[in-house]
Length: 271
Image (cartoon, rainbow, N blue to C red; front, top):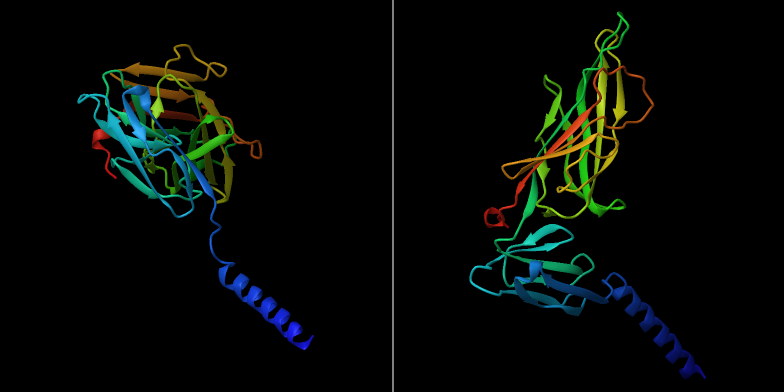
């Protein structure tokens, strides 16, 4: 009986030691990798289910010399221009990868600039004047569904200069836009107003979600969204941006956001 008790205790201690050693390790699970090509201008390989930590290699083969490989995208973002493309299977890398090949019919866009203008915000009262002194927490998110958004561009803190305009003061991630799809953009911005007489500050948030299809010709969203195209440059103008009602500031002109998109030249994008 004594020997049996010692054996049981030994087994318990061994189990505890085993659990302690391996508790910090990443759990090995299956990760599904899907692979396809854009516009059927080439073929792809590498699709499958891979264990955590296993090496995944995606290969893109063009149908002809004219359909040279350009890039791999995942969730709309360019992830690599290498072919073959090798990475490690994990929760972060699982998903659907799309190979983009060159084609005369290829018509993709990228965001090239963003500007955000707001009024100075002068009050009617003669004893005080509120002016914009700072832009903070400016971000643009994008997705094909209004509730599935990924960060596209952002900046934390920018000092405004007359005219009150926020323009190109942030990094724009290489997101690929298809001209015939609907996209939802969520624009968020906090504006700091300062009373030049009392030297007090207040903030106001402008969260706005807009739906964009580059092929639309008529104004939408209550007539506040306009899309124009000239020489391959698309300009999206969203007027009368909505904002929170925590503050009462008399603006003569509601805030406006302008985004410009141009043809995506994948051959110039670096890793």
